[in-house]
Length: 161
Image 1 (cartoon, rainbow, N blue to C red):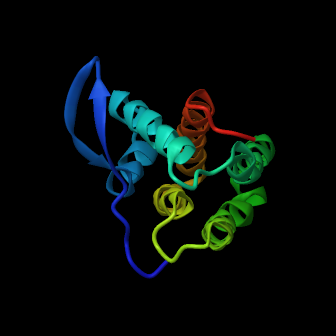
Image 2: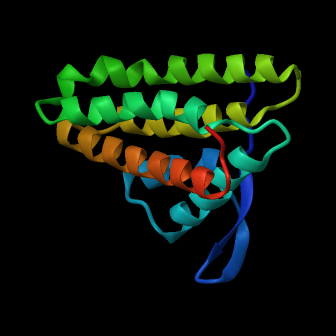
């Protein structure tokens, strides 16, 4: 994707609305440091949007990539080197999925799949920037937890299979 998207939502934490949060800007921090209430609140709004947009994503479309994340997690127990190329290849897989979903929707405007691609690609960049193998594993776990929260909120918001 040539231009950087803003993927902003008003997020509530402890029932209080806070300023808009742009996931493309924040996911790197959440992945590299830790998930917090803002990250979970953002995942909730993001998951809702993916499920309720004019041309929503199906749970199957999201799980296609999430399934690969889970496979990587299972293999990651050995060492990072066994999964590093798989992690790097998640970004092109996301880009392909976004392009395919956008084409299926028949629109030239931004599709929710483009938003998912933008946010998760930034998260994967943060994983790759880890200082060492242990840090990359920790970052990938944070990434997977965030992605799982988005998928859960998508389903809770009526996301179809």
